[in-house]
Amino acid sequence: MPRDLPDISFVRLTEVAPAEIIAHMSDPRVTEHMPLAKGGWTQDTCAAFVEAKEACWQRDGLGHWAILADGEYVGWGGFQKEGEDWDYGLVLKPGQFGLGTRITNHALAFARADERIPYVTFLLPPSRRHLRGLDRLGARFVGEVDYDGSTFRKYRLDTPKNPHASSG
Image 1 (cartoon, rainbow, N blue to C red):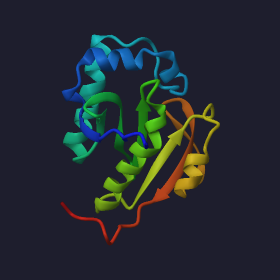
Image 2 (cartoon, helix red, strand yellow):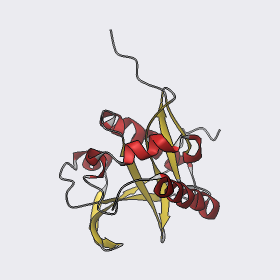
Image 3 (tube, rainbow, N blue to C red):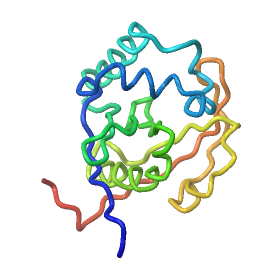
Image 4 (cartoon, rainbow, N blue to C red):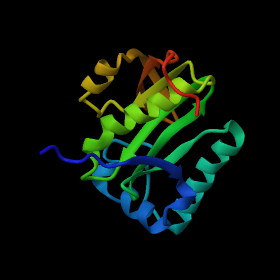
């Protein structure tokens, strides 16, 4: 009998208890591939993080979400405006990494339905070696970029509109 897939939903980060985000972002398996994550996560760090992500929503009308699987927090991710690009990021809790493809497909369906997003970019640190998922999506390597003092590999994926997508 096939295993039931969890229901994936996106909510604002403000709907998740700070203690859950702090525990998530304090795990070294999570921050291993996050060169911009410096220092430990505290109540103040978490509050500043959520405030910065909420500012993106205010400025751009879109930002990062908390991601829930069957109502349980499994990570955060979404789209953030970086110059002219809508950058997609995803940071899952250990034990939930297997949901990455499903969550990304859900997010990309959102992007394809949003007229503001003709393409998305992915910024990956050089430590990320398994890139087959980007190949399967059709993302292409653009080049290396410096972001806040760290080097990232930049990929781009066009998000042509799906003529069969519903608008509501």
